[in-house]
Image 1 (cartoon, helix red, strand yellow):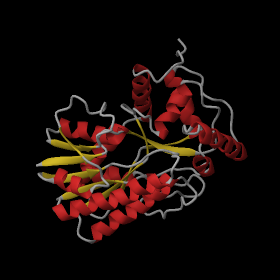
Image 2: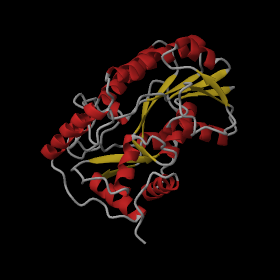
Image 3: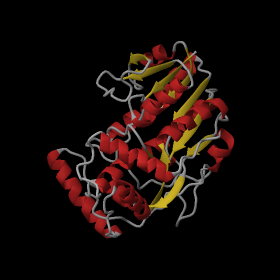
Amino acid sequence: MKKLVTGATGFIGSSIVRELLKDGVEVKVLVRKESNTKNIDGLDIEKVYGDIRDKESIKAALKGCDTFYQTAALFVSWAPDKKIFYDINVEGTKTALSAALEQGVQKVVYTSSIAAVGYEEGNKLANEETKFNMYKGSPYNMTKYLGELEAKKFCEKGLPLVIVNPAGVIGVRDIKPTPTGDYIVKVLNKKMPGWVDTGMNFVDVEDVARGHILAAQKGRVGERYILGNTNITLKDMFDLVGKVGGVEAPKRKISYPMAITLAYFSELVSRINGKPPALSMNVAKAIGNYLFYDCSKAVKELGMPQTPLRTTVEKAVNWFRENGYIKVDAKM
């Protein structure tokens, strides 16, 4: 039977589609009519139109499918209307999973986020049992947490669902780019003013896609799995991107008060021009938290691959450069 992927035109979703096709699986994708389909154009897939907020379109798309990858979400650091985060990440999740329950799907993989996991103080490693504590983060963080709570409720109702929590995903075909990919683009274009005292866990998008498929095959119903790889400070990550890309990495350390000030003025400009701020207040407030994670559960239970971080950065840098995102010439 076929596998349905929502969010298939996006960064993670399109990689899941490609990994499924590598396995010789028939794939159906649900896309909105206004979506940019560049990431899936030319692929041998069945394309149907709908929206995760439209239950009937989900139910229709699930016909003939035994597995449902619900990856659709709003992943941005800022939006003019914050309500859109709740509409998509919470209400959309409830609608899509309700349709899956009614259709009797054999396995559902719900794409959550490390934003829904929380973090440990200092640079200690958080894991799947860490309690959520990102209440002061962005609307994305909060709505992914609430969305995951809804997913667990459907699991209790009998939906055979596994939750995956991708970390900072980078790699090829990040067409927007995502907030994590934007870090790389800004460093390469020498538009990153500096670094802050924080750290993240970064992982290859193709490993994350394979992790989704392994979760469908091996994941225990009701469990969550952090899909991550390397914990690294933001300064060291910027240095690695600069080295791979042949540009000088940002040298200046930005303090927490300075980050808040920059975010304040960035959002003032955004209210005028309607464009996303260079630094949102939500992101600035989260600065100082080390988002480091123990990713061993997904590796041990699912067999999730772990591409070396440098290799992943090289793939991302090359893709951004080949697709015209980089305007600064690399040093020879």
